[in-house]
Image (cartoon, rainbow, N blue to C red; front, side):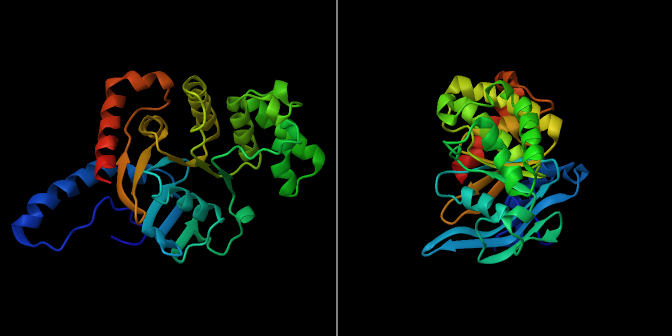
Length: 291
């Protein structure tokens, strides 16, 4: 079916009615799951048979995945399944051993991280403790060549977006965990990336703060329309945000299945109590159990 085909299954070596009896239903399910996918914009990220090994550990094994422009994709899987490695390959922080990465349909394997128009948010906030909130956010555009005045103007704009303009002179240790995460999001947005790569950004937050940030980030994404790839262990988080959930199997990291989330947009945190949301979560959980 062509390179970059992000298959949810592969046909095995069985023949005749035994294979047909099982696989015809999987084919039907795949078609239904991915119906309407071509209505999205052109591919923003395409991984083709990407493999990455760390000594004796095969982190990613021939991973193929297409993520389209302005799509929100969550990568879901257990610890050690290669989720972070996948993000780092897209960001240019880790080079694959084989396979190909395309960004905006152009080969990106030899493109430096700053040339990929991506922003990578690691699991930790990674804020500079001696810099103010404003200086932390301005750091990224400054590093990309913006002048000081322009960088600070950009920083103030994105701080307004994440509702932290009133704390621009604070130091990181003076902020709550939720506020520090807002600063991290603002710094990522300050370079206006087309692709935002987020590695479990809400994992360390308490439940109340997490729910508050869920709502705020949904609003930000709907306004800015970025392509987002978010790594998470949290099924509810994946379903709430995603257009599609990519379930990764561990040892080695492979795409087990891709689940399309048909919930309407705009989405709000309150919808987690709806029957449609619960059914989507059950479907993703069932796939996770098989991963």
